[in-house]
Amino acid sequence: MSTALKPAPYPVPTRVLEPIVAAALAEDAPTGDLTGAVLIPAEATATADVVAREPGICAGLDAFRAAMELTDPSLAVEARMADGEAFAAGDVLATARGNARGLLAGERVGLNLLQRLSGIATATRAYADAAAGTRARIADTRKTTPGLRVLERYAVRCGGGFNHRDSLSDAVMAKDNHLALLGEGEQLTRALREARARLGHTVHFEVEIDRLDQLEAVVSAGVDTVLLDNFSLEDLAEGVRRVGGRCLVEASGNVRVDTVAAIAATGVDVISSGALTHSVRALDLGLDFRLDAAPAADGAW
Image (cartoon, rainbow, N blue to C red):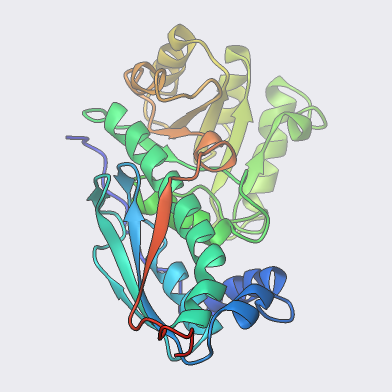
């Protein structure tokens, strides 16, 4: 069991979720579903189960529900499990019922979102499990799909991970290109202190370094977090030792599910990985339909 606190997978508010899903639906069927309109009688009804073809961690049920309900408000979606819950191949994640045309029109968008978000949650859980027993939190980065960041960050929380800053507007994070313009040694320390003094007291201040010889100039400036980017395991451990609790220590770079345990063992507080969102594989989920009524012998309903 990890000694780190577990994140709260608080849901994405409906007012934020629905415009994202509505934009996806407009992209997928700008003037309606032509196939459903010519093949499926308007009065036909059906039931459709979201069935897992492989095991994973569920995330995105609200997005799936929104895809169905925004397509046809008369559709009813019943969640069969909760986001953050593990499922096995063959498990039913949700059931949708109602007009068959509506179900078919919302199917792809609903599944796309549910598959991607569940893939992110599943990958995050693997990283979190690998770091269990250490103090390290697993965190995402800003390397998210444009327009889907709020949903993908929610999926990270469902998988047991934590979120980094939401956007460029939320926190100060000085990276290598910033430091290149600020100098080194005492000059860098002075520049960071002056920047810190201009910030509100609730604003987090993080600085990324890529060499151990930069560490003291940054930490002595009173930053909240120092990020050690692409450090060896030996240098990560040495960095933690030199910081000595004066600020949080984050590690990034070369973070994979097969390396994260060793990184966590160095004593860092946070391990961030863009792979949680930018390289994740969508899970294989299917929507299995069954008609509530069959056509007559002459094809009429």
